[in-house]
Amino acid sequence: RYDFVEVEEPSDGTVLGRWCGSSTVPSRQISKGNQIRIRFVSDEYFPSEPGFCIHYTLLMPHHTEAPSPSLLPPSALPLDVLNNAVAGFSTVEDLIRYLEPDRWQLDLEDLYRPTWQLLGKAYIHGRKSRVVDLNLLKEEARLYSCTPRNFSVSLREELKRTDTIFWPLCLLVKRCGGNCACCQQSCNECQCVPTKVTKKYHEVLQLKPRIGVRGLHKSLTDVPLEHHEECDCVCKGNTEG
Image (tube, rainbow, N blue to C red; front, side, top):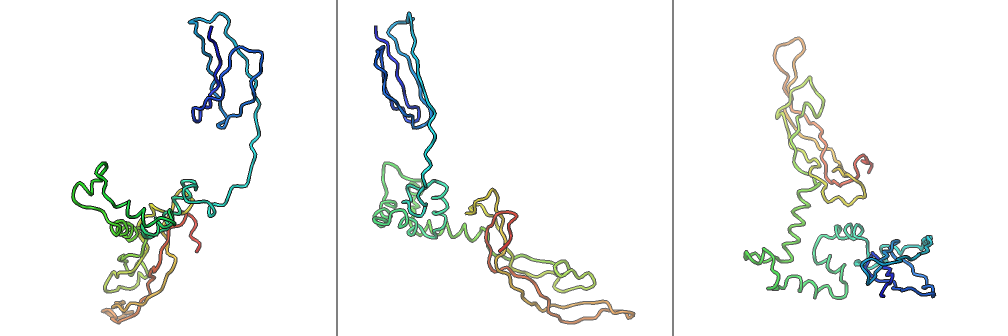
């Protein structure tokens, strides 16, 4: 007869041990993944007296102080932490230098060396990517993300002046706009907010009704409008500078 019990570590498929009927008690085995898989194998289709017994004990985890992310090499960082670190680089050269400080130039050359076994669509269609192209893609995304951009505002609404007509009726101002798809904050939702605001004066034509007299009073006047000079993505609901 050929009967045995096999104990396997499910996390990586490692067989912790295999034992047949014996008076010798197997040594203690510790599972790395808090689980074990027990498999009973017999050379008989219906074993006459199958059976085994297993004793287990729950082990309390030993909490050790985790090394600071700043002391770990990039490859050892948790994916979310590494993702935030990678997002902070403005050029692919700086990124590769961070990932491989000792051989970043070689890695950069390898990155753009064509391999005929696996070519990207850019190679197939004759548009071979260059380092500057990646930097340009990042810069384009930044320009169309959370940045100051031109907005037209109604002067009467902006200044809350219903007693006056301004001309032009609308002016261009710089206001924060765009999305925060690549927000690096640790929150569920980000919003684009101004971090630097300046007040600028614009000379416009003001038309006000004359009191008790027909016609309009016309004058040039300076109106103050807020312009957003710098913007940033912050957690929604947290707009404090």
